[in-house]
Length: 295
Image (cartoon, rainbow, N blue to C red; front, side, top):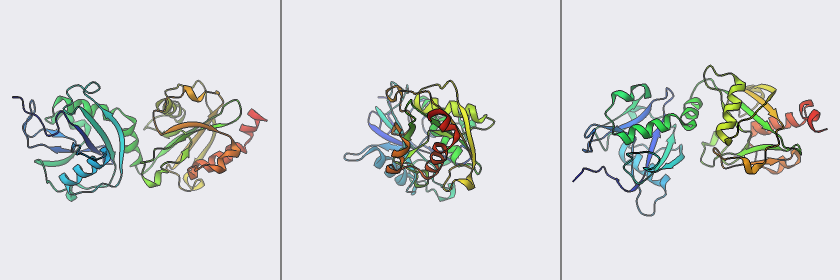
């Protein structure tokens, strides 16, 4: 009979713990599952037990295997063998974390070893095909790029204020499981981090398309903020763009965050709006840029 890894055919969770240099913590397995067999590398995780949520499984499995209880786990997505060929579990929940966990703090409670490996070295590691495809999928995601970006000592970002015909601004409801300093469950301005060597305007077009599935045609620069001007800012420099394409809410594909919705200026005080976003929106609605459009 063919060998099967623990959890094969079951539902499970894995943890993708990312370091500032982009390395990912992998576990070297001691069970024999072809083709790579004993000694293959894979993200830590395991099968879901009765009564557990996928998050509970991820947290428990990581702690059982390493002795570390993660505090900054975030859900990314759930995949099946139809999406990731050669995947062993029938349903796998992916979680990312950026807790600062040095290798020296990790106990090897299961498997042969744990090590941070940079993606540039993945091709040298023994891995089963499903693991290779799963990691490639994660490396291509905004979840990976964004996690690495937020760990950098200097961060530059973009925000996009889009308006409808009534002068309302499109805001994004942020995920509820974000780390506390990243304004979980609050409304904010769509946008994200500028990638290395990327022009700010190109980053604005890219981020909006990644978050909504929509490619904007035009954007205008409103203002560039420094961190000192925006208490609580997640970036050291923040480029704000705007336009009034009047995109219907029903055309927006919510690819990041919980929702997108238009809000009028007089509705903002009734909302839970991320601090830096609230300050930017107040400045924008009081600006000549906005008055020229709607007054």
